[in-house]
Image 1 (cartoon, helix red, strand yellow):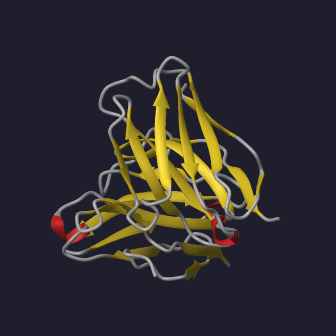
Image 2: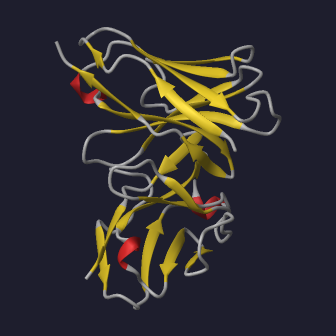
Length: 111
Length: 117
């Protein structure tokens, strides 16, 4: 069981907007630690998608956005495209574990 | 452009020690501010952070693996390494190395390590 909780799957039609939640606790997200998001396309290594809760690395489309509130964070993907079909992971730091923690991952299906 | 590449045996016997090396190119592992981490992913499952190291040798590990993990750095070779002892089938996974600052970025391509006799 992951320290950060994500829905196992989400889906949406092309052009739609979907959100993926990442729920933590007072020892990680709620303690103010940053949340980062990764996209993992089939058969490839994860790629940093959002860092520091809401910042996009160079080259990441602005269709991807991140937010954080309280003990949770969210990744939003607007204008859904077939190429967005992938697994998405959130990651933060946990003070109780004194280390990095990942969410269990969410599989995005583009209908 | 910074690149990371994992290397090591793809097959390890149960109870033995898994050893992997990550070679960093296009930048110095001694750059200040960055940690260098290992993350693994069992087949069909999610990501698990194993541990991270600073170029000075300072380390921190996942508590669930701490008793079996050693991460070291060789700045002369621009490499850092992972050793995981007393492996079982549950340690079968793709092992990734990555640079760590604000998140893990970039990642190596990963290497599959299978624990089997």
